[in-house]
Image (cartoon, rainbow, N blue to C red; front, side, top):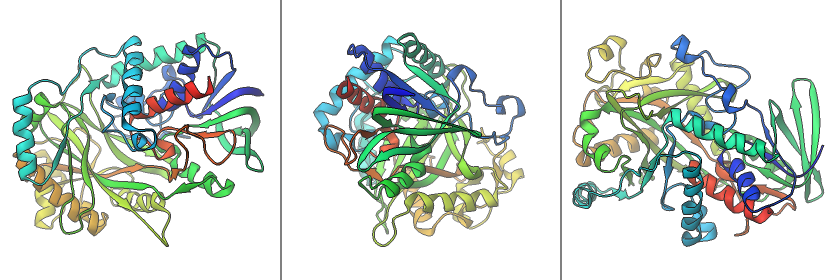
Length: 462
């Protein structure tokens, strides 16, 4: 098969590359290759079974059209201060302009007009004052909340738009390799079971998201794609009652707090806050179960969950941050018999494991029913655990009750980011004809910034 452009991965970066090419009137032929299924065929059986059944050959929550975005809480961060380091590559003003433009496309396809986290300046100042007292930084970021169920409807509309404009969507095929001729990329080779095929293209765009981080890391090593070691985030998903989080939920919707707690002073941050949300499980390759969270527009729980992530940057001689995080996750999974581990914060401080009967007596009832009560500290690295504990206690100054005895911590929460692919401000790599976008590139984190990077790529290719 021959195409002008082949895009590997139907996540936000790949989708918006194709959409912007169409909007700019490009007549180039486009194919998007996705190992998962179209949005209308993505089904997580957990809604029926009430427990994860470890779907094969991939998890429907993380894989398929729109990537993890279709089953996430669907939050679009509208500030270039949030979502990765892409603004440092192209400049913050250009990045913000891309976000504003991309946001309008989301609105055209059905995103909610309401923006969370704006207004209430006096209350925001009071929250910021408490954050400063706790040694934390509060990052203001307007949020457009799609909601898990609304996100799926929106991405279905985007999928249909691509079909209507003759973008060839190839589902169920996995990209195995790049087709290389010296330092030039000529396309990709695909596999589906025992079948193989090639797509030759003038331009190859890799946009495989966090799920494809380790795959892209291997390609970089094999084909001399210039890159540098990236950051890996190791942490927990924190869950507490809505009453505790009421003020920040109402005023900010998502309280993005950053700190550098003693004694190690690693960067620790909150991420992906879900008022009235639900803790969820995702499965990656090699049977790795990780925790996440989402929130619906209409269906609400009694709890709020938020990720607390500790960033790790490794240097010489170690250059395998993704493998390191995976080992942490595997050890935690082992303790939970392949599931997610949950522990009360007070039990961590007391040096004891949590028992299932203790969860049943708590004000905070887990929204992930098949999480296994146990001891997170038996698997979490000491440095990360101390950072997380001290950060949670600092957040308690901003949100009284956040560090209560019965606050729940779920593990492992891991965010894999590819070793950052080196590229210029026009998004060109050192390999001719090859481009790397979104979270798989190591430059973005999250739906909006990945989408905006796709828009920029679309303009270049158009």
